[in-house]
Length: 226
Figure 1 (cartoon, rainbow, N blue to C red):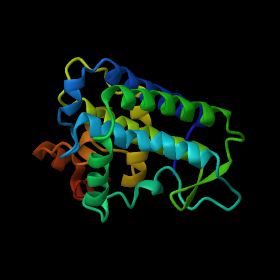
Figure 2: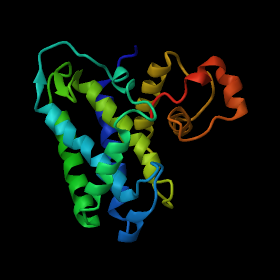
Figure 3: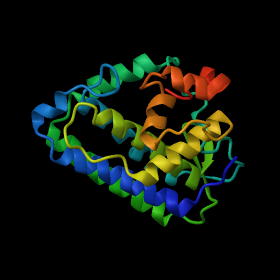
Figure 4: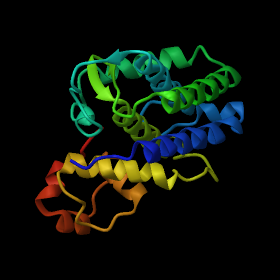
């Protein structure tokens, strides 16, 4: 298992969150109803789903743990496979909850909450501190890494039907790659850039015949997470 650089990971999360803020701040109201890479979710729905992460982070960072970690930044994702139980219920909850927000209020809430989570993570010390989240115990740097992965992958989902949107920050894609390699158990044996790896390893883009030949038996293990 590769270690992560807590400072670099926090910078990656900051870039990822602020890129999302940049995207949604300039979107007109009508664009919030466009579809995304998450089937059945509009831009409005996906932004609400994203909002849940910095909210959870703020709770976690105020919930210190003394026990040993139960997950790290890689094993946290192992239960998140496509079609897992509860996914349909969560999707419906998100659609219903997101519909209650106007574009202005949702964007403002995202911007304020994501910045607050970044500040709270920056102030958290020491770097080896552990927190409670979702019934798990995780170190703060590993928690931040999971947030960066979520933000980077959903950035790709968010911008599927949006023109001239900024790319996913490279530092965030580096965290995604480190996480996916951890789930795969080895470094990727094919030459995919960061966005392609994120899309193909999460089932958002189909594998080509060349991909399957290059991956060999590893190809049977994709997607690595949903």
